[in-house]
Image 1 (cartoon, helix red, strand yellow):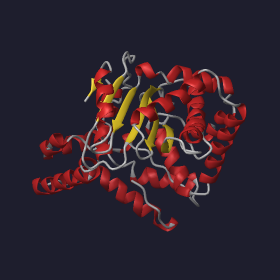
Image 2 (tube, one colour):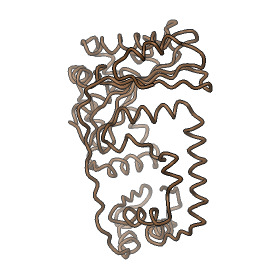
Image 3 (spheres, rainbow, N blue to C red):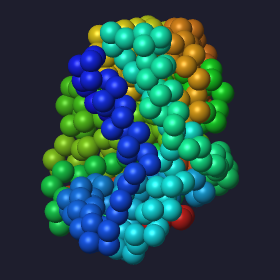
Image 4 (cartoon, one colour):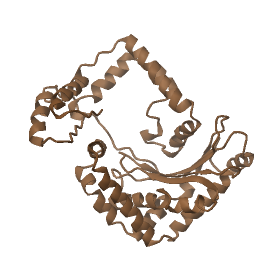
Length: 349
């Protein structure tokens, strides 16, 4: 939850949040109504979106053990089965000050905020500390493929997902190198993938790479692309694999790495112009068990990444033999893709 408020209303908003932590009342009628709301949200955002449906199945293939294999909103049958007693038990377990992180940013000081926090949150009875084990993943042993055919698909898409360490579960130097690698490969029009696949009449209309280090357990490194009209997804796959293979083999210019590092650091500097961005960054890091120093020292960590570290990170993580490939063909096209997927060991149709 977050609010943007006037300074003299800080105490009022903290009181509202304290009330949210201890005074929830639920009737069966309210629960039934909200279940319908959540079901409708799932229908709109997931069930009516083939890419989102494929994304759920891709996560279930990539994460064998981690809770990240399950959708945040839940499966429809689980939503329909929720009861008032389950919701109240969840509320009592998680919604209390001992499991909360409060970040206040603005024209206030710690000397002003701490007494308010102690007065407003300190009176709430303590609850048992919620157990949050760090759940790991077994080593990925196979390549897996997911293909979803849906008549609603107009623009086909291809993506490949690699299991990757997070800042919470992995080595900090490798994590910083993976962030730089994602920027080099697929962040913007000057990135390696965009230049190779999109510029100068390449086979794709878009190409990107994404990596999020702020998770509790293992994360993922994703490469995605969408083909031009009449270009097969297999052509996109071959083109992406060529770029990734070249990077793993050391074909990576130092100037590309430096450009990516400067862009990442500049984005972090500009983000400080926003009160909310800094508060969210701190809250996100703290909520997954990272220290404040992780956020404060992030620009220095990125600046220190070397070319050799980026190449080593690519070799360690971008292993196609252990990745999950997701295919979303346009309706009625690319029948040859089905035969290719069927021939692939561990294919999921």
